[in-house]
Image 1: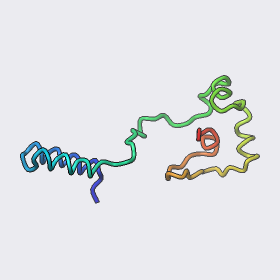
Image 2 (image 1 turned 180 degrees about the vertical axis):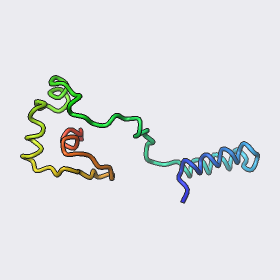
Image 3 (image 1 turned 90 degrees about the vertical axis):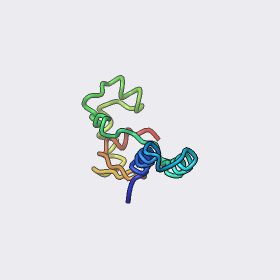
Image 4 (image 1 turned 180 degrees about the horizontal axis):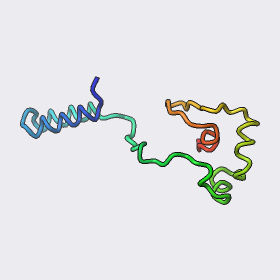
Length: 99
């Protein structure tokens, strides 16, 4: 099955080659627009608690940096967490994800 992006790309090519008129193109392009935002996930750096400094941890997560592993143990967060949208992450990253 083709993705929304590939169908939209083919629609542009079809319009450029004269296979679709403007009205057909706009109607089909609107039908093949994903409701989900497209994020370049590969360009995001991996989460690394070691790269965060004490002040950044306290500001972003409201806990001290050295308390995060113990908090994950206390809350019994599993080593690998599957998020509701299907992504997976480690326990410390899952603890630090904003809701």
